[in-house]
Length: 116
Image 1 (tube, helix red, strand yellow):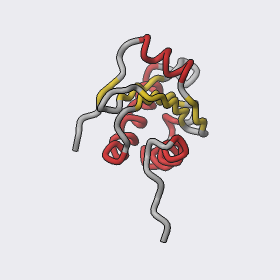
Image 2 (cartoon, one colour):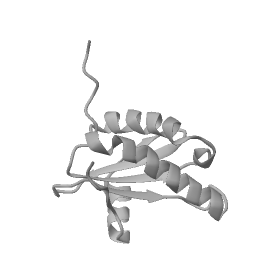
Image 3 (cartoon, one colour):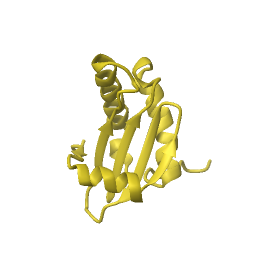
């Protein structure tokens, strides 16, 4: 399994917010932007609207674990910013992974399922 490269610079997050395409779901908002690098970088954020520090940390952990299961199939060359929503800390990572899979397929970052 390859390691997940994280976004750390505020400039990279801002670029994803302003120039990236957003895909909104009930549990996560995903911003996608091409980055001209041979790797996909991921940033995870949580606003104070989600709750206190415990809920925000749980939301980030759930998002990180949900993405970890999908990271093997993600195409390289993208910046992804995953933003948690209010319900995120109260659900399991498997449910978040289902929503995240749907959004990343719409974005073209995950390959579509083969037709039977």
